[in-house]
Structures are given as structure tokens and as C-alpha cells.
Amino acid sequence: MELRQFEYFQRVCRFNNITRAAESLHVAQPSITNSIRKLEDELGVILLDRSKKQIKPTTEGKVFLERINNILRLVEDTSIEMKDYRLLKKGNLKIGIPPMIGTYLFPYIFVNFKNLYPQIKLSIYEKGSLETRIMIEKGDLDLGIVIISESSKQLETMAISQSEILVCLDKNHHLCKKEALKFEDLKDEPLIMLKEGFYHRQKIMDYFKEYNIDPNIVLSSNQLQTIKSLVIQGVGISFLLQEIVENDNRIVSIPLEKSMKVRIGLAWKKDRYLSNASKGFIEFITSSFGNSVIESSK
Image (cartoon, rainbow, N blue to C red; front, side):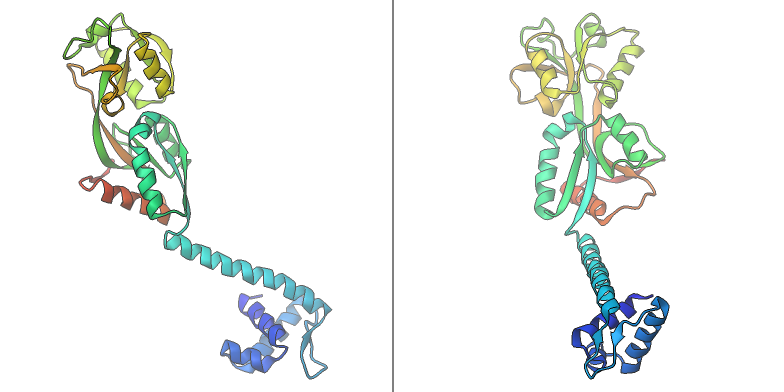
């Protein structure tokens, strides 16, 4: 059976006349007649009652017509839906983003992208950069806005912005008057850290290891507001991105003597099929952060 046969039968039933059906479809009358005969032979039933002047579907034909109406409607809807996807009127994107980056960067991206493509649904997964990268590599996420660290053979990355990890303390802390801090200054300080799975945490822990310091971690959380609140109350110190604390006068933020600069960027799986929605998001990021360059991980 072919869709063309369904269309011919549907049109004959609409007009109750083969000649008029052929004219409306711009085909020869014998084409429709032969096509429906073959369909009847294949199904083993008579679909049209040809005994009278006006052709009408048989009982079996009425059942068949109901079924193919649904099929042809679904085919038409699918075609329209695919066109919507092609024209970026519709789509679904699963995007991973660490909470800290999401706090200051994602609202701008979300609002402006939704203004351009209101019918594309964005599902956001708040995970650390390390976990987000793994999920992209496994195909669980379409894209991620992450801290770009070491190269990955499986990911493409595009730089968006640069930031710096700062030491954050309460206003009354004995270290808050210093212009820059060493890791040795933090040796015995109570630390409030992000949980494992965050590149941010791994980078800091690597520095402590480099200086042979066993950090005094009193709490780990993935809730940014919890970490900030505890710092403000003097429970401990933490390490946060510059953009998170630069306008918060309740927190003193100090750079490290060995600066911890980080690059933030968009990542997606290399060699994976990219939907038009994904391509649209990448193009949007490219135009919004104009000087960024796509880097193929070697």
C-alpha cells in the first residue's frame, strides 16, 4: 500500500465520483481506477460500491476511509511540524548550566533567545561543569554552558566570556584587608565549598594539593544562596566567581596572588547530529557574544 492510493481513495469518497476526483488531483482517471482496484486486491475486500450511478464506499470502505483519514491527517501534521522545526518555530533543547554561571549569565541568554524563538522549549539542568560535560558526551544533554577547562576529544566548545574565582569573606574577617591572598593564608580557615562535580571545586582542590595543604572544609553545597549566606554570617570563607559577588557589599572578595582565571563557554558533542534548534542556539550565542571563536577540542 502507498499513501498515493490512500489519497486517491479519500478523494473519490469525497466527490463520490472518479472523474471529479481525477480532475481535482490532476491525474488521469484510469490511474485512480487502477490504483483503487489494486488496493482492493491487496486488502481482499471491495471498498467502493460501483453498482449505482454515484459511487459510494462499502461498509468495509467506510471503515477503511476512517482509518486512512487519520493516517493522512497525521502525515500532514508531521509535515507541518517538520517545517516548523526547519524554520525554528518549534523544537526542544536540553541545556546544562552550573548554578553559579546561571545566576548571572543565563537570564540574559534565556530572555533574548525566547524572544527570538518563543516556540522552542528550553529544559534547564543545573549541574556542575564536570557533570554537565559528561552528560553532553553521553548524549543526555544537547548543549551546556560550562567552565571550559582541558580539551575533550568528544566536545566542541565556543568561548563566551572570561571570569575569575575570588576568595570571599565576611566584612569582619581578619584577612579582608589584604589586596591579594596566598593559599597558605587559607591553610586553617573553615571553607564552604561547592559539591563534587563542579569544575570550580576541582580547580581549587588541585591548588591546595599543589601547596600540600589539607583544606578545612566544613560544608559542601550546590546552593549558591546558602554559600553566600554562610559567608556573610562568618561561618567560613568560599570561592565564587567575580560576577556573583562584585555588587554585593555584604561580602569582601579578594583575588589570589596566583590568579584563577576561568573561561566560560558553550559546549556540545562533536560529530553528533545537531537539530535546527541546537544550531539556532549556537548561532544566537555567536551573534550575542560576537568575538567568540569556535574551538575544536584536539
